[in-house]
Length: 115
Image (cartoon, rainbow, N blue to C red; front, side, top):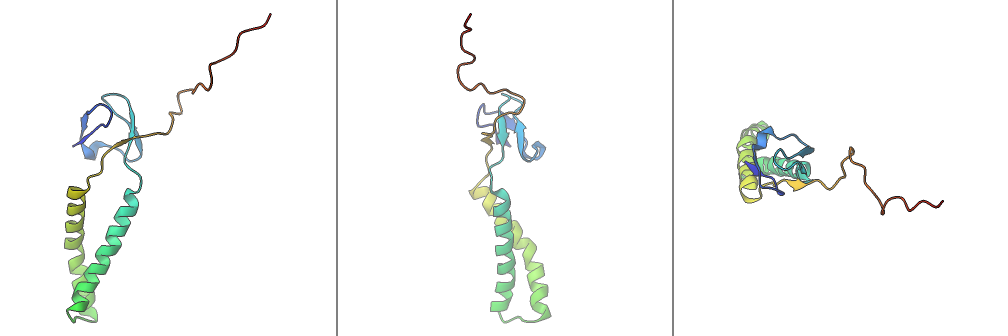
């Protein structure tokens, strides 16, 4: 469950779309934080390095190295993603981009008419 940062409305994480969306409780525009994709890519690259490095340092080479790395990859990914979600949970944030359906008023409006 995640909470809206504006009103505290609780939403299921699996029901929320990616990108920008509207909170059903207060109609505030929300989004997931930027950079989540980069974190996932980095964690998968580090996991692949760890999956190969562990058996290699234990003296395994050749095809067995590939087999052990392949078998170790899934448990290491699961452990890293679990730790990342427990230690650094992703929270919703307000979307600062203006709504396209609202007209923004710049200034105080039209001046007085001269007749």
